[in-house]
Image (cartoon, rainbow, N blue to C red; front, top):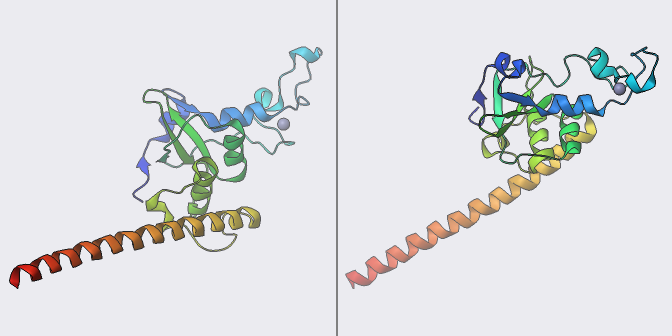
Length: 192
Ligand SMILES: [Zn+2]
């Protein structure tokens, strides 16, 4: 896949030079304190910070932790927390930043199956548009790795983008035809 870059995830997960914004925002989103039995309420930490997981939030120790050695460059950065939270809650992706270069990436927190729908949906949530290389290779099967609601949203977005691309190509072809026609006319005029 042309839009992905190979990256050692052990290095990303070590935290050295990398920020996992998805995991951080997921941890911040938990407001439950039931697992921490300390006496003083003001000292209590949230379930996720206390234990690494929260059943109420459906967050486990592995949630939003990248496992595949590929990263997908994002064009934009500094997304709203709500968008990042939606990506980590509704896709098998998280959002990481290379703190040395300031570049942001999507990356997968699941594997063993085609997760192109998850990656494409995450791009839609964050940037509206899906990268060219990915656009033509997203798995079309309904409810394959996304639920029905998100699959429909993904499909509608892809159709819209493909139609715009088609129009762009049509316009491009028209301009080439025009250029070819002008050349022929010029050559014909010389002959006469
Ligand atoms: Zn919670």
